[in-house]
Every structure is written in C-alpha cells, then in structure tokens.
Length: 183
Image (cartoon, rainbow, N blue to C red):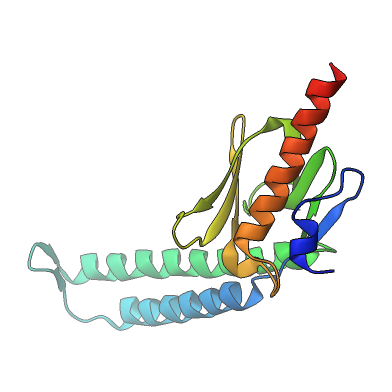
C-alpha cells in the first residue's frame, strides 16, 4: 500500500510507518570526534609552546596543554555519545512510528532517558508541525508538556514528512470527532 493510501487513516487500523536507523550519521560523528580526541590528546602531550586564540586569549605552555587536554576529553565524550546513540537505536527491535486509533508510538530522541520508545495519547497532542515549514527537515509532535521530534532523514523512501504529518492530524481529528459524538 502506498503512503497516500494511509493518509486518511482507518479508524480501527494501526498504521506502521517504518523509519531508517541513523547509524551512518552516528558512527561517522563517533569516528570524527574520536580522531579529534586523538589529535588533541597528542597535541597536549607533544606541545612545547603556548597558544594564542584570535589574538585575544593567551595561554602559556602549561595553559595550552590543559586547553588541548580539555578539548580532547570533550571530543572523546562526543564520540562516546555518538556510539551510545547507535547502540540505543540498535537495541530497538523495530524502528518505526506506530499510529494507532488512540495513541502514537515513536522512537525516543533522548539518549539518557530510560524509555527507548515514547507513546503519546492522541488527545494530548496539541500540534503537529513541520520545521521549518517551507522545507521541512523535522516532524515535531507537541503534547501538553513536551515536544517529540523526528528528523526527515529517518523516513524511508515513499514516506514524506508531509504525508506522516497528514496521517497524524487525520487520526487526531478522528479522535476528536469521536469524543464529540460520544459525549
């Protein structure tokens, strides 16, 4: 079935929208920051002179060593975060958006939260936005007290941000119409 067939949504069906796991971006960022950490750690160890930053900040020999070491530690932490993110996404059995008649389940973007997936009741959704509106790079689902974002590059071929946003809005409207009709 094509994505456009799902956009209107069936009241009783659950719509599954597959997503692409962002391994390439996370692993490349992990490798990049690991290289940065190695270069900066070597620079801190082999430094034999001071450092002048933009002609404003001057470090003597020892200060430059500390500066390079701090940057190496920060780069190592960024590398570890990239690898941790890849491991978290690999732990999910299915990487998808599950749009049901009463709730939507999507992968969590936060690497330090315990939940790997987030479930949002459709009646708590306040807005479904494409950011930025002209050329969307992310789908943002806003609920009462927080927002959930899904980058456009996660969507597999055949699903666009606009189609997914339309399907979610259709389900929210169906739920609101059902609540009004039910009492």
